[in-house]
Length: 312
Image (cartoon, rainbow, N blue to C red; front, side):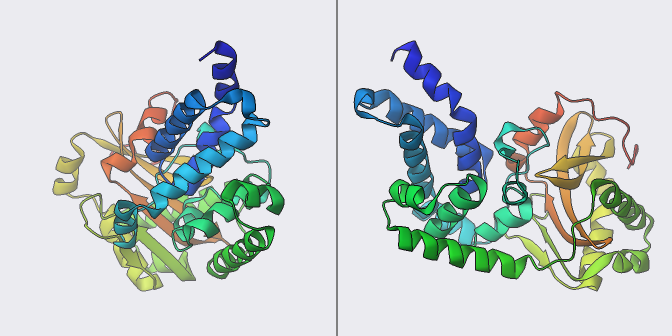
């Protein structure tokens, strides 16, 4: 392959990776899909490709759909043992982020909701909301009619909106104050204060510190508060499992504030928060090591600043 063809592909690699990540919810799978797209590009008769960007988008999207439709992926995801892979602020896979819809489409909350859509609905939603493709362009990418694209988009938006009925999202400074107060209550045992900091329709989802076979889900304020209190209570067993002194940092993960647990210099867990009207409306706890690899790698290349809890 000539250098011009390689350069053309590399110019669009980040966009393809961002697309694949939104479709698959996994940075590792997204990278594999982009590499497979490159192999297709390498083998293609490029002189007959009129619009390379459109061709590459079509190939990458359909490779992702093949993965979503595979028997193994359906088994893993329907088994309820899967959460999206969290990404640290600044990760190029989180782009584009110019509009509210683009930023919203990459939050852990929305990526989790997209799991309830069919692969076609998910693809149309991502292409339309995050990458601003027209229905005519989406129809060409997915080999469907424009009417079908519009129907998929309507169903996807309706289902996502039905689950996203929240009050106004907090500004970063307000969200930080709420999360700091929440963390103080969780580590001090003030369960009553924890309950007061949760919305009436709060949800919490956890992978059980990476040890549970199925996701743990909690929906009432009291159950979420009890779960959080137990999760943030320091014990000898948890410290042994971490393998090093543990510190808690605040960072932005997938566009929302998160508590990142660091043992030594290694990220061992992350809890992402959504804050609405001064209270926590959802939490997503991820500690499975294979879901933290990219976040951990990014963490090694940043100056995290002082932890909110230096010795847990």
